View 1 (tube, rainbow, N blue to C red):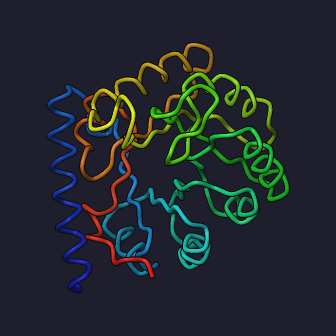
View 2: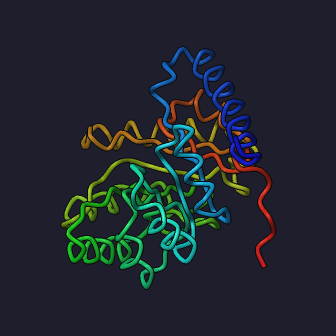
Length: 239
């Protein structure tokens, strides 16, 4: 094994131990929680190693990094998730490789994604990003729609050709009533997911939790966790 493959294998094993322990503590099956490795700022060579180690879900948050990386790994059976705030001028590129966009937070973006997906002849999964720090009608500091905007946004995705409503996503907020209360934030997201699934049972993905709080996300019921640093290491500064 190369040094990098050894390092990634060891890191993945530690994350797997954490996930397994969290699932045991929550009386959940390990296979009910999908690990998504967030590979932002890391090269395509790392993605290839991760694939060799069994990873099948990877995520990016910037199209300028993601598009060439996805192209370089097009021969691999990977599902690509886009998790960053998405500007409409990047949509045409993103729908070319993203299987799921986890950061859908406004109707204008839904329209752009639909047009792009139709043109590309693809079906793109959508998670509605929920901002638990946002007041009614506002967007969150890190993107996302306020909880009372979920129904309108879900309706827009339902009506949009080329898109599929897969569920909800959140990032633990840094301000507001849920700041520093990850478990409470993820419990709130699960309540919102339950309400959404009452009318849209197929929209059952719940994406929550990162390296520092994956245990709280699993305990709350998240179906997908997004892990970067714990697998790939501390990111080099962007410059």
